[in-house]
Length: 213
Image (cartoon, rainbow, N blue to C red):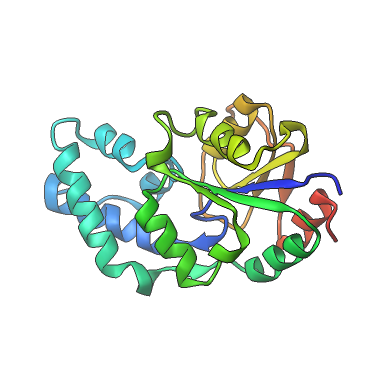
């Protein structure tokens, strides 16, 4: 096996929350800024902490917007979230192969646990590192380093799997190899000079990189 410790991003990697996030941003921007936000503008910042994105839109109204976003997001959550293709089978095969797994996400713990529980995925993960667990967040290496610490993992035997530039930057800063999955809507790799170690078009390719086929 090439990697024993697999660290997964959540949104866009394990579960498809694209519609949930886009609708929540559109609702929030419309309520507070009277803006009809374009989907492509929202996609640019997928993967970073919510409050950072909202402060970019309005520093003055960010805290109020955060509350609106959370309330609306939670009200529509279960009807807007689906599983990414092949994820249950992927996680089961990794578990059988002896991989130890954790989730590393910029989401709040309550919402992250809710999304994982919705599809009975919690049983595959020893740890779930969320927004509340570290002072700094992706692309800072702190969340990934926290997960490695909790797993007592060797960084050389670890692999970060995510769908956004923030996941790849986080892995790079932590000295961990990275996989960019191409089944997400996240954007932001054009011309930034940072490349993932692997690119996976589907779950079978990811298994091959890990060496758990």
